[in-house]
Image (cartoon, rainbow, N blue to C red; front, side, top):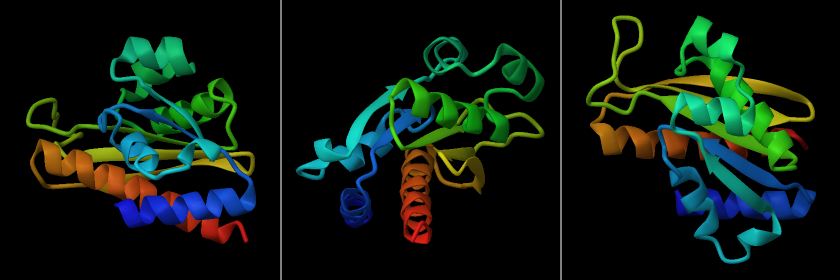
Length: 159
């Protein structure tokens, strides 16, 4: 992941863009990877770990209606986390994640390993679904890696 984080940093620096994260199931792993890179303070402005629904409501403005209608692990919540984080952290791009790392927490419709990654930028707010099948730690790390790879892909597409 460190190579990806380094490449993201170079792209952000070159494009003069800032980044923030709002993490749930990854618990800060995405931010940890980004801040492993010396000089990341030039582009990385901060992170919020909104693990509970209350934190999602209070810290980044996920709507109560969205949480009640779709549940915390949903594409809509991932998008609202990223959008809210972009505003709260005053950044150009914000990444978010929400998911079921395991071993508990699954339902018939939402199995262990289901994650949604959110990405918000002035051009729009998007989500990606991940279906992972590792243990808790493997799922968390795989989700963080997938988020960083998607961010890199998105940044490269910006031109």
